[in-house]
Length: 299
Length: 299
Image (cartoon, rainbow over all chains, first blue to last red; front, side):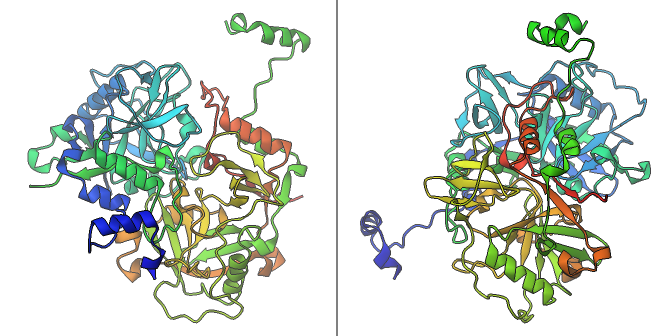
C-alpha cells in the first residue's frame, strides 16, 4: 500500500539504493544523539556555576561572557566571595521567573565586584557569525544562533542580544540606570519573557536541574515573592565548576551552532517528521529550538 | 531636570493641559484593572471545567467549543460520567506538559462519548472576526485574537486554529488517525509548544490554578511520566461549573478581544512603558499577550 503511494522522485531514489528501505528522517533527538564528537564544544569550567540548594537540588548555569563580560566577572567574584552562602530563592512567579540572592539584606559585597556595571543588554553584532533561524521573530529584525547561544539581532543598528528564553538567567535590577551587580539572579521558568530583552543583562542559561527552580511552590505575594521568609528555599553554596576538585567537577558540552548537526537539528525542530507529527510546522520560534547541551561523555 | 529634557511636542501638550502633569501611559495591568464592565464577557458555566485534586489544589479550565465542538462535548460527557473520578496526573514533563486521565486502565468510557472524534485541529476561518496581533509569527501566516482566544490562521488556506500557549489544554492521542476521545488531557506548563499546533485538538485553557500543575514534581521517566504509580497526583473529582450548586459555582470573565481595552492591552504588552521598561520591544509574541481573564466581580 505505501509503495503504491510513493512519489516518482522518491521511487527513483529507491531504485538507486536497491533493496534499502526509504530512509526515515531522523527526529531532532536522534540528530542530537547521533551527532559526531566534532559537533560538540566543551564548556569552560570558569563558565559553569553550580548552585546547590539545601534541599539537595542542584542547578547548573552556563555563563555567557561573550555577551555580558562585566556582569559575568562579577558573578564569578560573587561566587568566589561566598555571596550566595546563606542566600535563598525568595521569588517564584508562575509562568515567569524564579529569583535568588540576598534580597533586602545588608550583606557586604565581596571584593573585586564592580558595583555599577555598564548596561550589557546588547553587544556589537560585528565579529559574530550568525546562523539564521529562518523563521520570523516578533521581538527583533533578526534571530539565529551564534557561539552556542540563541541570538536576536538588528543588522541596521549593528547590535545583538541574548533573548530571554525558558531557562535563561538574567540579572535582577532596580530602576535604570542601575543594571544590577549580579547578586540577585533569576531564571525564566515559563513562556519566554522576551519583553525583557535589551532592558536587562542576560548572563547565561540553566543547563541542568532547572526543575529544582521550576517545580518550586509559587509565591503568593505580588510578583511571586514568598509571603514568609520561612518559605524561602535556602541555598547551601554556589561554586564555579573550575573551583571544584576534578573528581567532583561537572563537565558539559554544547552543540556547535555552526555544525551540520545543529543545522539539521533546527530544521528538524521546524519540520517534525516523527509518526506523531502528521503535519510539519514549517517554522520554529527562536526559543523553541534550544541549543542542545549534554554532559561530556566519559571515554 | 526632567522638565528641561522634555521634547518640544510634549512641552506644547503640557501647556495645553495647564498645570496637569503629563499623563503616564497605563501599564497592561492597569489597562486590565481599569477596563469598563462592557469590555468583559462572562464565560458560560457549561464551558468551565473544575478539576479538584486530592491534595486540595483546584484547576479551572475554560473549554473552547468554537474550535473543537465534538471533543468539548466529549469532555462534558466524560466529566458528567465520572471518567476522572479516581484518575490522576501521571505525567509532568519540565518545560512541556502536565497530563492527566486514566492512563493504561480499562475504565469503561461513559455513555454519550464519541469514541473517534473528527480531527478538530483547525476550523474554517470563515465566520471569524480576527483582531490581528501586529507582530510576525513563526508558525502561521497570521496571528491574532478572536472570540476571546488567541488564534493562528492562514487566509490562503482558509483555516484558523488555537495555538499551543502556556496553560493551553489539549487532547492526548495515539498515532493518527486517532484524535483522542478527550479522556487524557494535558496543559502546557512551559514555553509555548507551538509545534503541536494543528496536529492535536486544543480544547481550552487553564484560567485559574495552573500552579497546581506547573509546580508539581517532574516525572523522571521518558516524556516526564512518573516512575511509580504512587507518585501520581490523584484527582478527587472533575465537575462542570454548570453542575455545581449556585453557591459553589465559580464564575469567570474574559476580555472581549474586539474591545478598545483589549487593543490597548496588546499594544501595551508590545510596548511596555513602565519606568522599568526603558526600551519598548515594539512587538509581542502571540503567546506573550494572554487574553485577560478574571473572576466575575461581585456587585
